[in-house]
Image 1 (spheres, rainbow, N blue to C red):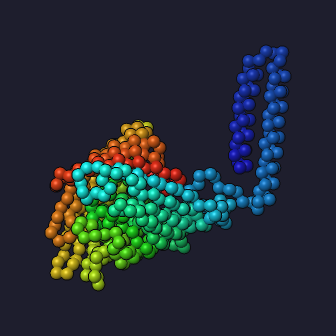
Image 2: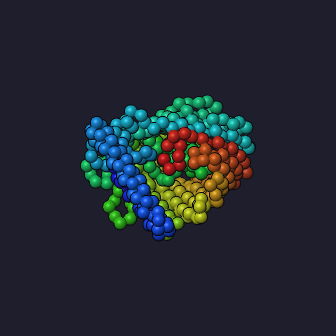
Image 3: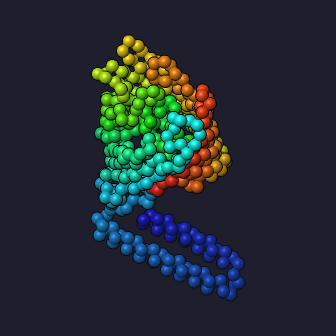
Length: 412
């Protein structure tokens, strides 16, 4: 605070000096001396006022033990020293967020539930904050609609140790969306489209791949960005999967991801990731259903004038499934291209393809067109048309996403 007042004083004093020089050059010879003396007196008065405010601030610091509050809006706690006043406050008053995802559906695709209805598909409530400098807690619950009924679910609840004795290593422990691929870690209200891409839904389940365990993240000390994530997990996904096209994982799982990002130019960025997950199928019996999935994700961004942005994003999935008397190898991917031309409007197209993880090698592909109007960063109205290329079934989605708090923001 004292540095701010000193800077403010110097700036004002400089302005007054320039004003004094201008007055001295332009004033008449009979009164310029009096005006300059008056200006000097004003500067002296301002200096005395600032000095008195500095003394008052010093007195307040002495009474509070020398602890200064952090700047408003600070996302991370101080990285060294004793806990700040802000850190102590955040442990008692976490950031609270609420997010709603309203979806209406129509069409002739009978695989979709709630056709011809406009329903609250999901409502999330998040509690997030710092327990201590470098230690963060995130708890996210959801009230989700599935097959016409609502179910309460703990989506994520984990503690993050952003600093550990080993430099560049951080650890998360608890339940979370696993860090494999690009989209799996994101909640649906952060997507650029309404529905989950078919390959993610088929291989990871209708709610994404989650697990309870620990994740270790290491930032490799190189001239460019490279992060390695490794996790050990347990998951009971049997309640969220069913025979047919959806597989999912259960029991113990092991994950890894290597990802990097390059700045091609001042307006272009390329992000690459390679992930793997090893585990057992959700319908496994005595570990007779072994799953291995490799994922390659590519994201390209080009920033234009003002709010203009081109986004290209793809994920490629390679599945190997070992079942009694057979080994299945499957492939799937999705590709999305989106263009935002001003603050409010963006449009995109997405193509999905996957091979069924079950015997028979059934294939499906979809093409979608998406149009989004953003009232703000956290409130959007979206229209999506999706066509099943193989059986000519159509679906139209109308989505309204709204939220309060940091978890609702796309940069969260």
